[in-house]
Image 1: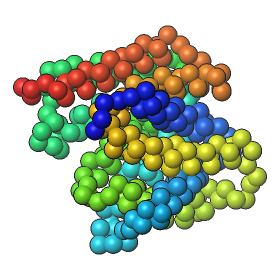
Image 2 (image 1 turned 45 degrees about the vertical axis):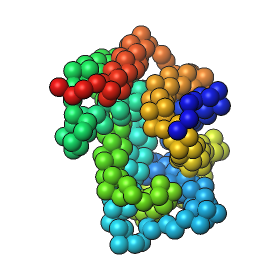
Image 3 (image 1 turned 180 degrees about the vertical axis):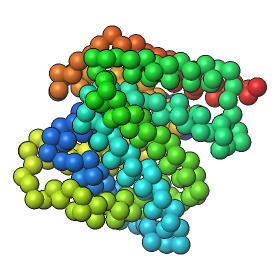
Image 4 (image 1 turned 90 degrees about the horizontal axis):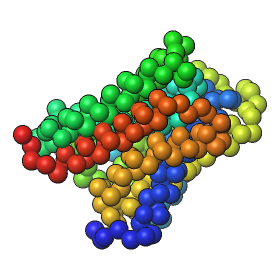
Amino acid sequence: MRQPKLIDYFLLTILSLIWASAFFNIKIATYSFGPVTIAFLRVFFGAIPVLLLCYFKNIKVEAFSKDWHWFAMIGFINLVAPFFLIAYGVKSVQSNLAAILMSTTPLSSTVLAHFYTTNEKFNFVKTIGILIGFSGIVYLFSDNLLIDENNFISALLILLGSTCYVVGGVLTLKISKKKNENVTGSILIWAIIILLPLTFLIEQPFQTMPRTDSLISAIYLGIVPTGIAWLLRFKILTTNGLIFQSQVSYLIPIFGIILGYIFLKELITTKVLIALIAVCIGIYFVKKGGNHKII
């Protein structure tokens, strides 16, 4: 791993912007598509750049190998479930709230790692970070201007979607010795297999004419935040390592709020800003706690 250069920070910022842009595009996609269709379009178009990379690099995709059940399970938990839950939730809440709620993934992963790993237990600093971060989320749910009895469940589902990413990450450790391109391509294939029949049975999207902006956003969600962003993430990981790449956790909710305001004129309340600050502080302490001796 090398010391980060200006180009590395530029790529990190681009990755953060791409992932943050997913939230307002999900909102636009919901104008014409249901959550199952949005999830399907994301994995379908997201698979294209990943599988093309595997083809040109001559990497074997083992979606139907003896480990197919792991790929299918991870595909469901890491792609199908969160993509559906986020799209379902964003239909009823502002996209900037989704960006903040999804940014809790490092906090949730710290909690899960305590119980399912042997070398990532809680310590005082991590505990403080988790408490501060989730206190910000609890405070966000008290914002009656943006979250009320009509969309409370939707906001909870987005939070559940972030937890699915964490669980999927833990399951991925079971096949961690395989190439990342192979794993990603395989779970995308299984996500497509799972979602294709559900899309036709539940929502039948091809019977209606979608809005142009919704169609563009749905295709963008697949190719850019799902496919190209993964390739960019992999480049950053191999060049600068996980700690450097994990700094996107701070930038995504910030960019998510800014983009939601620019493109959708979404309301930014004082409680939104306080929750954002609390989550970022919580993530900072959790990451800092990873460098401390466990007590």
